[in-house]
Image (tube, rainbow, N blue to C red; front, side):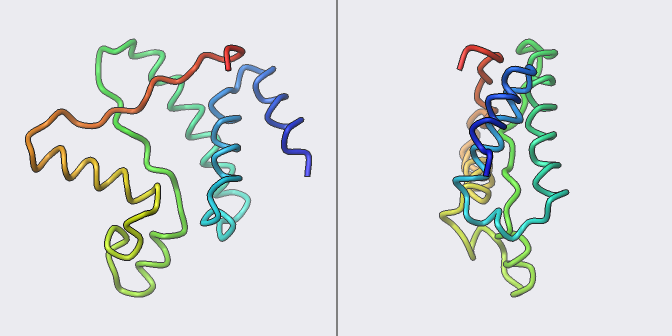
Amino acid sequence: MLTHPTTDRLREMGLAGMARALEEQRRQPDNADLGFEDRLAMLVDREVLGHLMSALHGTAPVLDPVPESAVFGHAARNGRIALEASPGSAATAVYARLAAALSKGEPLPVAPPLTPAGTE
């Protein structure tokens, strides 16, 4: 697989968000169950998130993105709530942090700042 040349090329093209998302997909075994278009959509979503955060310049919060994962589909097929079925999943952890902040009256968890292209 040409993973490293692909991520390097994405960064060279100014698509650092897509490069990061591709690296994350490789580290998450749940993503193996997703089809090509679903995985591609995740890459595009990450790039769009980076542009959105850049455009807002801190004027409005952008909540933590929820990584797509097969845990949601597996839980639904088994009639379970994903957070209960896979509490250790990165995808469900976002919801756990959001629920904790809401229940405690704390600020909502926002997406971490993205590193500009070429500075990673």
